[in-house]
Image 1 (cartoon, rainbow, N blue to C red):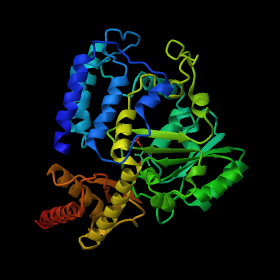
Image 2: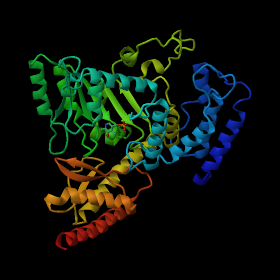
Image 3: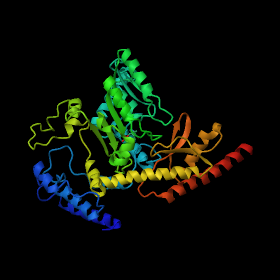
Image 4: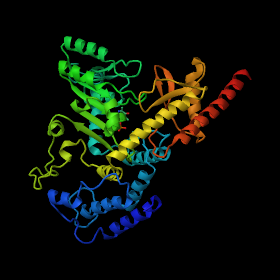
Length: 474
Ligand SMILES: *Cc1c(COP(=O)(O)O)cnc(C)c1O
């Protein structure tokens, strides 16, 4: 089967499923061991074969619960309405993140429109809304907003009155600050440790801070290494942190949202993630470098089988979870923050089976090679300057301008490239200086595309510089 036949094949399967979903029995039940046998989870990977992939899809549908069947009446939801199914398919094909207007212009307006409609219907005049991953998350956010309003000190100082202290690098992701806020730790209890010239956490300074904190009678309880920082792509060294862990006894987390994908390649793992297997927890996103449709993430913990449940389970879920383990299979819900959980595993599983670990590893290795190429390309354009040594996948640069106007100019350049549909590139500040950040996560990008990207950048930059000059003199 060719790639251009994929959609007709998919639609044929979907149509068949849709026609049959209310007839027959709602489930062809098998116990977990039998089902595992039928599914043959160890089937081949890495064949990049569409027939095989659709074989998995058919198996998935054959043994799935037909939630649109009239017999499925036990939950607060059932098979989705057709317009929302269409929405899901369109969402997947146009995969984007609804977190900024520039990456999701239409959906931002749709979301705001719907929120306004609902605020109006509910009667929250002048109120505010947000789509979340579900009411579980929404309840927590509501409680947090209330807590921060009634005791504003907690957001900064935390509920432990400063006893627990967490450490991340100065370049760590903002989600760490949010976590410190949500957990009642207090923003001040999150120490941002300076980075070295290459953007990696300075382990010596960390050791000093840990010693100080301990001397003050506080408990350093959590250190997060970033594996691939968001702006510079630096990898905090894990092994020296393991050595500090044996002295101070903290929990060592590795945030591999971006660079954690290197774990799939033996060579890259050796280069970037030495010691990872001894960390206490590790997270990586399949929806970033590995290309799954949003959202697709995994958190892994290295402290036995009961950590998540022991830490997260709370409240009475007996209407939902069967603790008697009839099937000998544990529910995923009790160790999740959510109640309703989207099936993110299907796309993940299909991708894994289709490309195989080796295929995904090759993809990551290829991205790294292309980033090397981009760096060389950058060096051939005297109008551009590299703004940080390339540590891995991130290429940070800017259009060369006098320091006083460099930030403003590069921002204007970026806007023009975006608004004229030439290219869309991220920007960030490194030590107060605006850098443009090239990231390659698209499998169809090749060397020619990178050449064209820089050519478009330089052409547009030259034109803009000429206009600025004319504006200044005339
Ligand atoms: C993107 C990113 C995150 C956030 O991950 P999401 O899956 O987008 O929520 C966290 N840490 C780092 C280092 C990141 O680059």
